[in-house]
Length: 175
Image (cartoon, rainbow, N blue to C red; front, side, top):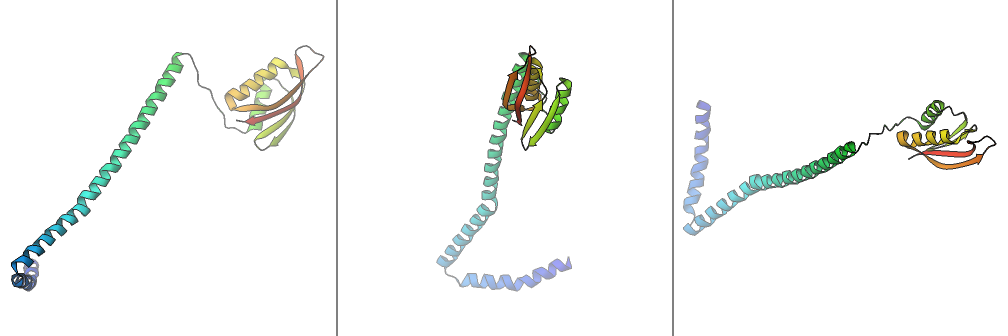
């Protein structure tokens, strides 16, 4: 309490000098100074409180509008998924495994004999032994549907065996 009393007693001369100066001003100067102080006070309140709050409110409203738009899009996608499920559609598994690994694994499942694979970045050149046409098409379809691996170029030649083809050129790429 004594610290507070000391502080007020030290400020007493300061306030007395301010009061003396105020008394020396004419009534018109006092009015102008009061108007300036009130204007300054209002401006400080505006810049310090009102303007930042209104900026924050505008930013919050923009975020809210963006969130509502995103929610609307999610609801539309959910409706699409539900309608596709009702129509009997199923999800496809898409793999990100290396292309050559996927090609070899599926070739084994389809009993295809790969003689050579040459990796050219995002493309594979593949040499296959003679195979049945329907097996080759099933294998290529599975590569595209489950692993996004598409045929870029293919050249087939018929063989003496019915239903078999010679794959002269096969280029695959991930799409």
